[in-house]
Image (cartoon, rainbow, N blue to C red; front, side, top):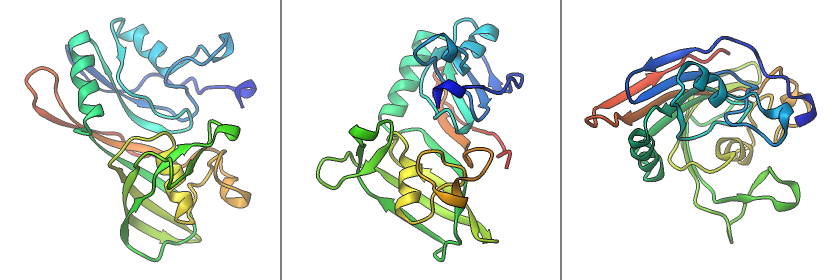
Length: 215
């Protein structure tokens, strides 16, 4: 996949900026951080640093996922936010379009995940050695052979939402790793980071930043 890396050249969409943090709407198809090699150097943090030279990484989104991402503008903010992510004090919601019409209206997936070593970066469910992974989900609407669902991860494992939806039998549309057949045949991964709730590093005030799903 790396050979065909052709990230979108959309202008940077800033959702909020102040003296400690900047939140942006990441486009699908753009790496959060640089990959190995010059051809993978274009990434969101490099673009953010052009506008906000002191920007520091706090978390990542998969290349194919769009939506809200926060960067720290000071070392203090980076530490403060890093601890919030580590201690699961941030709250994230995602919007996804998935294959098939889900019959239940809401539920929770509690299935441990581990990297699938021979096939990395793929992840898999493993009840013996997997790390705990929990996702709450709620149907927004379903019809025409697909479901629009809101996902609320309680943990932050790699590919967690993608693996959990696959485990339910409803892979995320356009997923290059986990969807097959017609479910895969979409112009992008239909997964978007919709909201991020966190405490501001200066004073601890609760904040909630939203980016509308582009699909």
